[in-house]
Image (tube, rainbow, N blue to C red; front, side):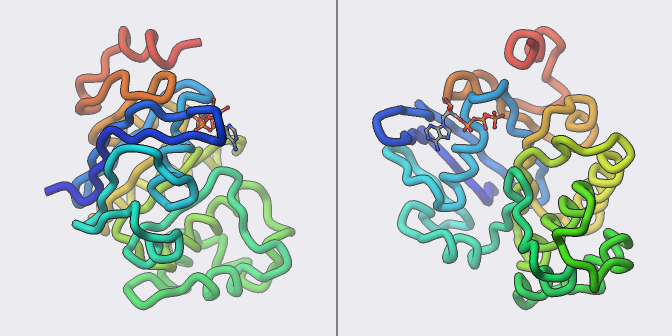
Length: 229
Ligand code: ATP
C-alpha cells in the first residue's frame, strides 16, 4: 500500500505556475528517485509535500492523512523528514546541539546517527559552521533522522560534494534502505547512483510527469530525452 500518494498536483509562485500535474506514490520501504532537468519542478513538489508551498490543485496524502489540511510542523510530526537543498543546519550550534534540537521519540538518537556517520560523532562539539560541505550534509541527514521519520526526503542529496563524500552519502542511503525499511524520496543528478539505490523513478518535465516506472525500465533513450543536456 502507498504511504505517500500525490495526484494531479499543481502549484504556483504568485502568477507563475510551476507544477501542472505531478503524480507520484511511494510505498513502505520504497526508494523513489524524483528526476528531471533544472527547473522542472522537483523542489516545488517537495515543498508542496512538506507544506512549504500551497498547492492550487490536486491531492496529497501521507499515511491516510490529507497533507493539504496540515501545516509544515504538523507534516513533520506525521513522519516526513526533509533534508533540504542547501542543507540549512544551525551554524552557531554544535553538531550535537543541531541533532538533539531535532530529536523526537524513536529509534534514532545521537548514538545511532553517530554509527551511520562516525564523523559526526567525532565532531560532536564542533560548531556546524566549521564543518565541511560533506559533513554539513551528513548533519542535515542526521537532523532529519533524529525526527524518526517514516519517509525521508533528500533534495539534491550529493550536490556540490567531493566524490569521496558523495560515496559516503550514497552508502548511508543504501544502509538506510537495507537496515530500516524507511521510505526514501531522493533528488539527485547522478544517475548511476540513483540506479543502484532507487526502486522506481518519476521524471518531471516542465512541471508535470513525463515518465514514471520501475528503475529497471528506465532506458538510455528516456534518460537522454528527459535528463540529457
Ligand atoms: P533545480 O534542479 O534547479 O533545483 P527543480 O526541478 O527543483 O530545479 P523547481 O525549483 O521546483 O525546479 O522550479 C520549478 C519552476 O518554479 C522553475 O521555473 C523555477 O524558476 C520556478 N520557481 C522556483 N522557486 C521559485 C520562487 N521562489 N519564486 C518564483 N518561481 C520559482
